[in-house]
Image 1 (tube, rainbow, N blue to C red):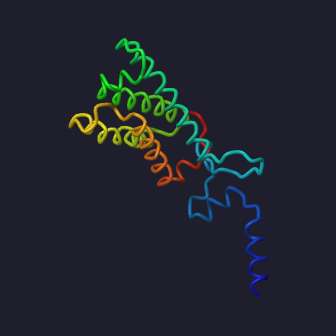
Image 2: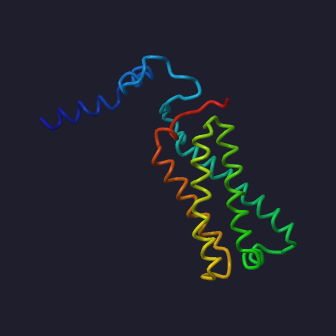
Length: 176
């Protein structure tokens, strides 16, 4: 009895279902999905899912932005190392990192067709985690900017938002 049920579950799991059937089953309109928003198809080639691909793309945009913001900030203040900057200018360093991560990530999201609402939410997920670190500096709890901890917290916030809205971030999006 149990083996028959398991065999039936395996057959159902392997069944190929069209995109139209998925939308109908999910209670959506019977209209064809728009090209800007398509569900991910499993191709079996070991490719990353659209969710993790989007996460890595945004992470890459953040890293590029942080490196660029750090280089520009080092040049402006005339410091030789980042350690000098986070001790001499901790507030400015945190704000530079927040802007450096947020601006290119939002630009990438807009380029990929994610829209302003998603971009604003993700920008908030990048900027809000800097507030506790700014308070640590302002109230002399720490003498330097904790940029590493801030970056880790903002990445966790980004991933948390993406997981919370997993359906939105698991769609393939066409560039507009």
